[in-house]
Length: 270
Image (cartoon, rainbow, N blue to C red; front, side, top):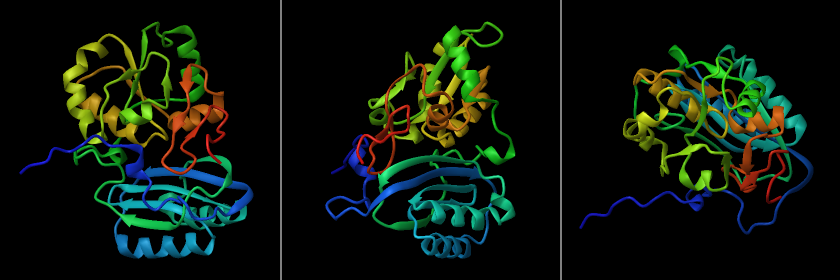
C-alpha cells in the first residue's frame, strides 16, 4: 500500500519547541536570524564548536550547517547574543554575516540544536550555488518605493512572488503577491515552469521570511531564462525592520513559538 505525502502543516515545524513546559521569562529576549552561503568543511568539528559557544552564551534555538553554508535562529539575553556573534564572526567565513534582530518577552525555543544537513534550505537542485553568484537584490526602502509607484525605476510593472509554503502565506503576504500554493520549497522549481508566462514582461521580486529561500529561487529563475528577477534582500523581516511594512497585509509567519510577527516585529504570542 502506498501513501502520498500530505501537505505540510505549521505543527510539523514545532518539534523541540516549548509547548506545555513553564516559560523562562525575560524582560527583553533578543531573537536573531541569519544565514550565509559559504563553503564549509569539517562539519562535525564546526558543529561541536558552535554548540559549545552557543551553549556557553545561554542561547536556545537551531543552527543548520551544510557544505553550502549556515542558517540559524537563536534567542537569549543580549549579552549572550553579543558574545556568540563575536565568537562566530571571529571565523573569517562568517565575518560579514548579516543578522536580523527582533525582541520578545519569552525565549521561543525549548532547547539548543546544531544540525548537519545536506542543504541549509532544501531545494533538491545541487547546481544552485548562491556562493558562486547571486541574483540582483533590491533593498527594503527601494522596494517600498517601487510598490508605492507600482513600477520599478525603469517604469516596468513590479510583481511580488512569494516563495514560502502555503500555510505561511496564509498568515500574511505582500498585497497582490503571486502565491503558487506550494507545500514545500522543493516544489518551487516545478511551479516556476508551470507558471512562468505570468512573469513575462514584469520585474519579479522574489521574497521569503529572511531571504534564504528567495536567494535560491531568484537564481533558479535566472537560470531558467526568466528576465528581470530580483530577490528581496533580508526578506520580509528586514523589510519590516527598515520600512515598517508598507504594502504588506497581515503578519509574517516564523518557525518558533512566537508564531508570527507584525510589521513592528511584535510577536502574536509572547
